[in-house]
Length: 144
Image 1: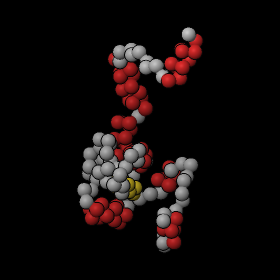
Image 2: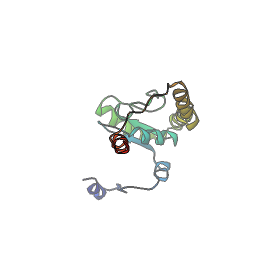
Image 3: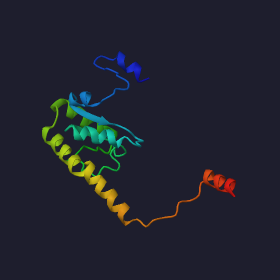
Image 4: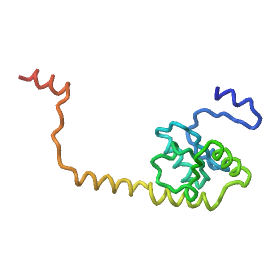
């Protein structure tokens, strides 16, 4: 069904691409119109990191702490989503929204900040005894 969209004027269906950045670089805006979104947040964050206006459903923006209207647009209804997408295409890229989105991603999701959180969790964790796996039990039983 997606391939059939290529027959529409102005629609190019690429399929998988090794690097999305060249495609994002030329986008006026990025839409994530998903009702069920698991793992899609990285794609939303990639677009924000490339300073793009992002229009996402609440599901696609789940887990992203950015503020609606400041860091990205999260319309609450289908009609509002369509209107936001049309507006983004009419006015072109919003330099201010895109720049704020990029700043948000750089401040919130950079590697060092994420690794610092992981270090904090690991440093505070009590050592635990590992549960014996089925393979481990078999090996132990064979040695007795």
